[in-house]
Image (cartoon, rainbow, N blue to C red):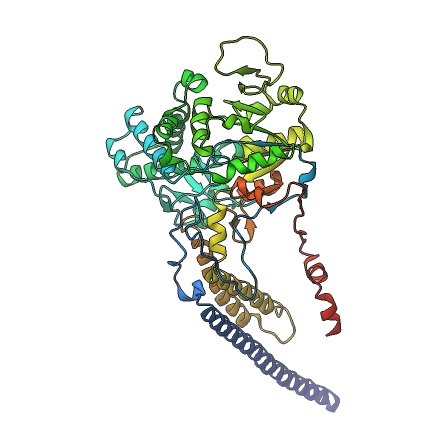
Length: 565
């Protein structure tokens, strides 16, 4: 009996001791957790104050803190608006020059014997008037030929709405930006001019944020060139009009109608396309060419430099000869512009030029003879890549072809013939100008700091004596700050869709195509005039996530400092 009593007393004592031990551990856990959270909060506040001080020193703003992007928004995408003004360096680093040539793939110009060029938005740079005219003609065609409501003629082009590279879902009528992995950037999905308010609606429709390759290629189309930007704006404006007026519509009907109007805009009748100037747009440009084309004083010097050094040159374009002739006379201030090229091919019907067997034909001469050689001073139309290669002997990696359209200009010659390629991206100037501003750089620096602090806080998850609930609340709070910073960095490029090149961390679908199929890219073809003809373009080393820490330290020479410390 006495032994049983002692055993019960020991159990009670152990239970009491265990309880006090548990209480002690809980108090210690609370104290430890509280200390860590307070330490992290203090670090966040100190870093934020430091960033604010640094930005004020550079007369800049951290946009997500100040809550304004007015100083950076409102730019169009067709050129630099502050030419002649040099932005100041931030953090001791210089700025990116808009006239640079940017490298995706190593390219030695010494081995380039032949330079080929597209015309529209490559040799010819258009003013903002062209987009307004495209919008107006398309709008009027919808009313005059396709019996759309007359009130649509009151719509006006908004150059700040759409950007190149967007995708349009022909079934849903949604315009959106997609990243390099075919994932949707949810806050860019628009129906008409309004953002889709509920992201879950988009997620439910696509069963997530990823677009399958089949759906992407069969039920969507992409805005690949600058001609398509006003078309996308009009499409969104018409859908918005129908919504506002409660007019029932099927999105695919509207996009089909607009595509039909676009064919008339660019080609007119088949006879005009084959033998005349072209469609309504081409006639508008030719009738007032100084209002649409920008003079290119450096272009002649660049082309003459190539030929002086023994390089062959050719012009390969889908536009008609009368249109090209008028434009090149204006650009070069000379009727003898054809002397700048060894070969001129018009009405080429790219991208089918690269895969078809359509024969070449002389322009301006009624002849049914086959074209077996390209004669000096002659102009040719149509044709195909295989015959072009056989006639000229120009093939493989000794050819560099430069154009603005990924699918029409760059992909097929790279894949089929191994041509080296260069992309002209006119919007690059304005994006670089924005990225060079002190406010953009300080906001980006603050965003990166927030992400570092969030990762640091998350590193305490699951550790002994740490209660994750308070840490989780802190991470949620900081994640909101991160969202604000990301939102403002998007807005400085375009309030609806952000940057042409980036969906937050990832490149856009458009940028990824440039990275894959263009060896080099630049804002203007004459940027190549800034480098020698035996220049070697070396791309920056691309780091995989597991390589970044050590190899960055090695490449920058900081590994020695780190080891010494």
